Image (tube, rainbow, N blue to C red):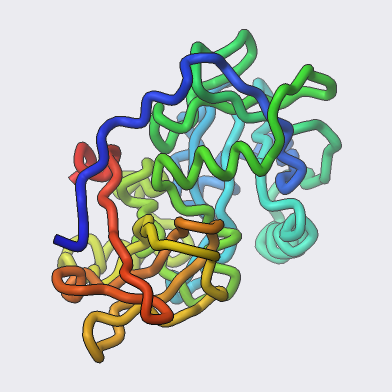
Length: 277
């Protein structure tokens, strides 16, 4: 058996907090802020309440993943939590779409924090992807007792992809990165950029590949290292660390002896995936 079902990730039950320097913020404000974003993003923005947190993406017109993001509701604005090295690109993209919309789009400087392995501290909101991840908060200053590397290890243990690290090109469909299982796509909201392709894939069940966590012995293979099922290509290694990584895998080639660099590979279906399907 090359794949297994993981037991629920329980952590140490002592809350840990890390600052995520890999994330940055954009505020979209003005009378048209919510309808402007609602027509672009995979998530319902018009019903986003102040203090509420949602997960979504901005896709290319053909439906490929461009930017993963979190949406924080404010009384008169929406704050986007995005990859720090993609913020300028997203600012440019939003400016391109703005046209006559009455919106102000600006970068803001606040910290993004993650908390996990215990009760969420005051000011944190549960991660909308899965409660197993813990929660997030925006803060200028906060006491931390963990590093972003610790947070990334926790994310990998829970089995949730990091689209920025795992899909650095614009070739990945959001469903391949499990957005449909992680509350990242609202299929009832109507149109958004890339909606036609995304909805068709979900409706027809034409999902041939997904990102799944894998384990192996030894160091992390290079990004894109080929995973084989016998002599057949079964997928490729994405981000990770020694002993484990995320991989983009063909669902029809999971059964059998998988290897990477001639090392045995075990795939795992996370608990949140079991309850989402």
